[in-house]
Image (tube, rainbow, N blue to C red):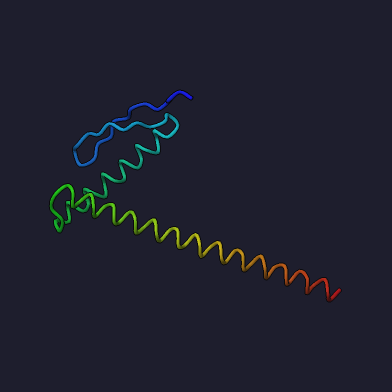
Length: 99
């Protein structure tokens, strides 16, 4: 299978990076790069973290925390959905038993 990825230029904190990416994922990559750039600028602007590497690590930690929270919420939502389906089944059976 031929490699169909192309090179996309992204800018993060005024540094340009060349990233290989499939054409159908370029918009998502550019959006992610803009989000990362904004997060890193916010961290730098706060003034508590100095140095590109430290700013990048803080941004990565924040993103990782948000991802962990989203996964936990999705897991909790799936568990609630399963419980609701089970209760629905019990209610349906109870209604049938009453008829």
